[in-house]
Length: 242
Length: 242
DNA sequence: CGCTCATTTGAACGGCGTCAAGAGGAGTGG
DNA sequence: CCACTCCTCTTGACGCCGTTCAAATGAGCG
Image (tube, rainbow over all chains, first blue to last red; front, side):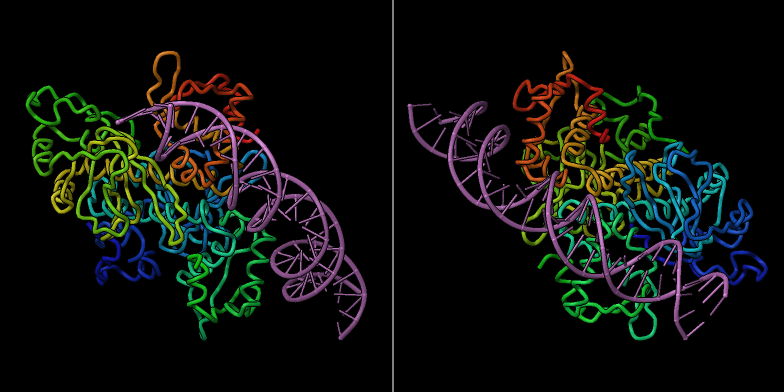
């Protein structure tokens, strides 16, 4: 039943002019399971759209008329309580799929954290593609199962972990997701506010915890948006509360 | 794309002797989408198993060799941190499916909260059934999407809601899930410890919040395991932090 | 009745939030 | 180059919500 990680073969028969030809995440995204012919039909059903940082892709409670595949950038999924409290349920990285729902409306708002590019498909058209491509259906299930596991892992963090453990866990997650450049320098494309709203903390607490990790020589801030892990083992320990 | 809630037709051609014939949740469960013939083949691939309250159905980190459909009882999905802290990620009610994962191991422990009955299927056999029944695949995706939405909703609760809001939300959830008997009496088959571990609180806090709701005449405890909602509107307000 | 275990209640503590001020960059204009 | 503003992030002081520790109450059951 394991299909995550099984990567579709290269598609040498896809012509260079096709928009998917040089897609950086083609094998990662849901489209990765499609044959060249199916991919052509698929892609032709929707445009590529761009959003700049801060833009809203879909509003919570909007009709779920489209689904998206993120090819570049970074999105956040969030929900706002009536009094202004906000919780971020997760981040979408390139290759991730936006629109896993059986409901008529979206349950969360999706906003661009960084300038982002997405392939946009009308839901009706997408459903047809899914119906006629069993592998796509299977891939969607795999993606949903993966997201579910991640969400449940986050439940443990929010329900039972301390501020120190949450921040340490977050930095480890980022280090696994964000391109580590030369010298293990890690990009941190997320503001303190977004970190706080993802971790169920306030920005002051996040800032204090990061400072503490810095003082303890576990990490090193190499720039406003970059850091370096000095003591990986210690960070692992802190994340697990040891 | 909406398939939740679309109930399969009755199956008059299923013989009375078949184990699924009088299954209380047949139309609710994943099996609900199967034709009588497919259902026969499906059911024959695994036995019915029983667990008493407290028993473990699958251990976290166990090999995911089987999948299950819960026909009666109540399960909890939980994870234990090394130092004993525990978080319950969700409860499974009759009709729910256990085994949504693409990994080789289970990520959470599943234990019986009440005496429970499950249909057990070897994963390999189940995958075959899924492969040859597209509707089953679609149903599984729908179930996963539904669970994902529920988990993300719980993220908001754990990350941003107060103790009062959490307990009020929980009682409302239970009132929607548990058979309300005569006089709107609601069964509460979950201990304070499980409530606390689900809500990210301590049992003393849960107890205090319930007492406060009782004193405020919002609910009424009619027994150790049953309660009644006196002021539904107020409970809704409290759950949303108004 | 007496044991055990779940739940409730009380009192004091502490981690994280709140409020407030300061530090550090990035951009703009002189 | 500095001066100024804006904004994010950091740091400090204090307060509160939920936890911790402790004990009482109550339900189930031999």
